Length: 86
Image (cartoon, rainbow, N blue to C red; front, side):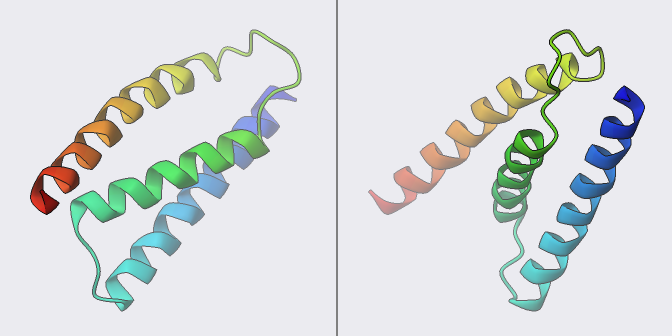
């Protein structure tokens, strides 16, 4: 059961990443910062869709650490955008 959730998670996340890359390129809005923000939103959304019902899933624990790191990077991206406006 855990591998089914993990596989579905990976397929959905990869589809989100490819679709967001395609849309950003099509709109001529691709920058690494924009791609990171859209990808991070996708990661959080997909994590909500595939959150395990049982606690202690081994494949889920590293994702929580990844989200913590991504929040730090997201904060830095927001800081850069705010400082360019001010």
